[in-house]
Image 1: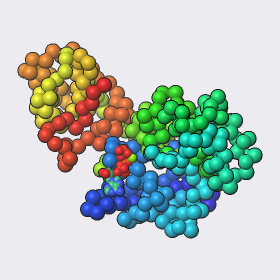
Image 2: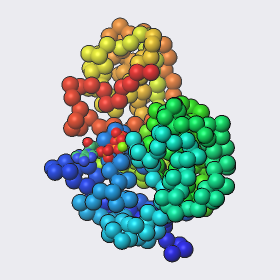
Image 3: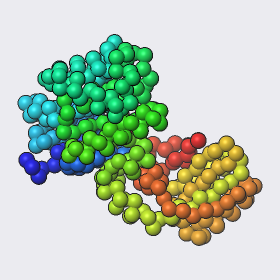
Image 4: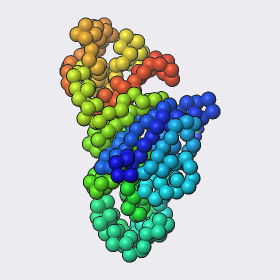
Length: 331
Ligand SMILES: Nc1ncnc2c1ncn2[C@@H]1O[C@H](COP(=O)(O)OP(=O)(O)OP(=O)(O)O)[C@@H](O)[C@H]1O
Ligand SMILES: [Mg+2]
């Protein structure tokens, strides 16, 4: 028991009718670790989490939590005692109750004595910046405050493992920060966290290991620092162009440079190429000149985890229609 991982996932796959949502995903979560599952929308993150905790049945493969096989009900019940789970849009919060009443309710559900909960509430609410609101009805709270109450609720029974699906999605900066701090404190106590996120900055900061999945398949699985180091030598060349580049021009460019990433800002467009040859960079500049765009600057820099993620999950294969850029976004 002592040396076994908190979670072991082996070759999990899930097929919904004829759609393969997850293919052969494996990973382990160890004590003291934050493990991040990253991937674009629809990559299979939530499905993987749900299979891990036994909420949906895998088509094949297995998952163990504290050694318990979560596909077997009697073992899943034991595994459940060790985990606190916060899924996206989950209903683990009572709006008609205050945060303190919520905590007492969830604690009681898990068999935690009321006094233990009340002793714990002060510290937990201080950490989450909920002290002033401990006796107010949750219904009036902002989304960020509700998410913090939801997190407190899944911590009520002091689980060994926190499983969080997009814990900071759509939250204000302060609430997201409080949730990150709570995660850090939690693992420092010899616990472990499994989380999914789109937020690369958070993954880079919190996760010791990262699994990147794309269309249900593993595209990277490594210690965060190793992943960053592996891409360290891959330079990004960023070309800034005045005004927004027209969609038809972007399509023509992406036909020649399939992996180009375009970011439209108010008065400029930023075009990024990962480790292009000098010739490719010159070709791009010539092409932009030919289209009468004014080039403002060309810079080379180190990639961030965000860009590593995009380059790993960018394909021009199936799913991509009418020549749109693989990843163009507006900021
Ligand atoms: N019950 C289901 N029936 C059919 N298809 C499903 C079902 N649940 C999920 N899917 C599909 O499986 C794929 C993976 O979904 P999943 O929710 O795991 O993705 P995700 O990585 O969590 O995405 P997001 O970032 O949007 O939360 C998606 O294409 C989704 O439409
Ligand atoms: Mg999801």
